[in-house]
Length: 124
Image (cartoon, rainbow, N blue to C red; front, side):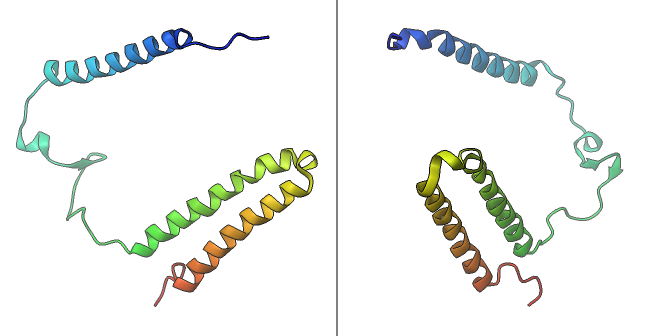
């Protein structure tokens, strides 16, 4: 029988986290203070792949683009949750099947809500 873990068992992990965090802070501050601090109009101007920028970078983008991206991620991540069921479907039996059906039902309700709101319609 295994002995219960104590807080002393986590001491090496805490030391490693503290050393890593300390190293990150040290490097951030050291590069800020020790690095060159030369500013000029040419150096501080924006460049993209060696090409001088043209126009304003802040142009309006349709909210439909962002909605489509977010919805894709939402419904794409849903597929990941089918993997545990696919691996253990024999052990989960009817209870597992009902859980998957309920899971899919929740996402279908969300999908039909998105369709009803017109979030996937590009032209209005």
